[in-house]
Image (cartoon, rainbow, N blue to C red; front, side, top):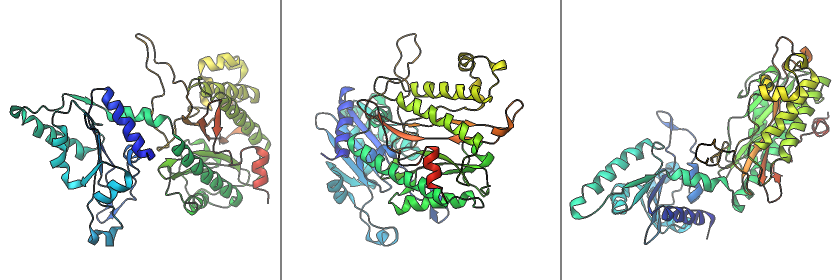
Length: 443
């Protein structure tokens, strides 16, 4: 069974456990850039997870009942449109290629869906995720309810199908991990390329162009997100986008960039000196962030909580802030005081990671279900989960902050797959230590 068919079967099994019914999962709609041009099309992640099909105007319908079915609705063959827009599978070829039981033209939805809904116990659908389909859903339900005098019952329950799929997507299978490893390798080489070409006088957008070149040259279809290329004080802006600032001698460059390959994202951040050599203050803070990341990585293992990595990183970062004078011990007290009061947030204001997979900020709850009257506990890590590890320090000018550290922004981020005994850092090919970075950039 191909992985997409296996996932459809697994979802049908979950639907049966809830009494059965009909699931409807659309792909993403096409978006117009202006009157006669589309944005580059990217499929919906849930839809692709279950199908591997990348054409627009498509819907998956799964039936969980006495006779389980997986059905694809897609664009019909149209030789005239293929001249303009490219190849279309058409229903029959798509059914065979992607392992569906049946397939219909997308125009047949209004005819076929009410038939499938008739006497189905429940609907599995993510209301609010697709405006056009939401409206069609009301029409289909009305069509079924109008047959009540003929003894046909409409679905009496509704479930959010994305809740079930989120749990499935949280644990990556071998096929997904293999793609993510390749995506991380491409992105790591892009970071190497950026380091090699960087020098004072270049613009941030020129470095971004080197990243995009390496992504596409290596087979990636898209960047996974808008690349951050931030030099000097710009590195202290968390979601800065590559602009026209010029790299200056003595400044750091922070790059947060990753490609998407076959529907899966990578997410890597590296920080390096524009001139190839860390200054004393830069190196001091960099080593603190690197040590914080190492502490977080050491905590990623089955049985530990999702938040354990963050807690481990924050402890190292806060101690470093005290040791360097970023935080005045006379004012903030001990390490435990800093952690309890959150004083470290002046220089580190985000969490240390997030799920990653088909989406760069991937789906899945970060907390487990709570017992009655209790706060939800943080999620326990399991093999196959994938997450980023990204501590940082961002120093803006402020009273009492040592001037030698002003405008230094540092983040180090890698992608981790939880294994049976710990984790696998799949982005480790991107240079990370001071010695590695300076060696790559040696001129």
